[in-house]
Image (cartoon, rainbow, N blue to C red; front, side):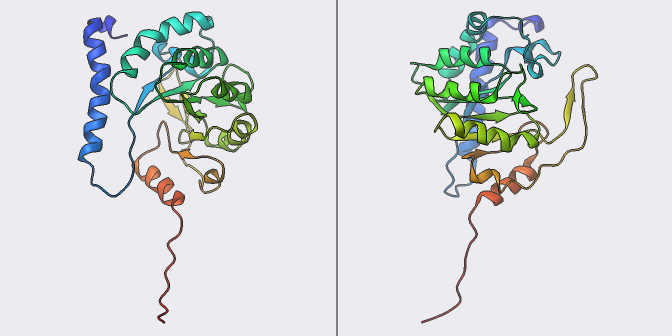
Length: 234
């Protein structure tokens, strides 16, 4: 994509590294409040580069080996860019998930694996549990779950993940709106539900497309245990 805009391979790799460096700089400049902050380098899906909504259909037309080769160069740059872990995210199909797990296996680079789902299945139509079970085949996969999906998918995803793996579960859905790839607009009404119930099964909770800072703040508050005060004196 960047080559079509006149960027060289070296320019593109420098931009990828810069994305991690900027995130790390933002972390170091944040006010210290005792919170542990990670920088996760995003390794997104092949379909997103096509610009036609393919990442929400899972019909790349590539085999598992072809997907692995396509991801390989960018994966190598991001894996060595200094992030704390890799976010293998918005993955629509079992083949693409398996291709990325093949790359991360034995690399020593920690990662989470996050699928995009619809109607209780991967976008390619395969069972969510089949995708989540891939986490068991690589020690580097620290967590598995979903992102870039409707919030209504979260409960089923948590249950499906817990049924096939004991890895921590990550969920960060969209706002509730749907992407119209042809018109290139978001449609529908935003609004995340109360997320307290997600915390009962998921370890990492956040938001993806159209989820803003105020939503993240609300999610964070919901995750924190209540502060009990006792005014009694002995």
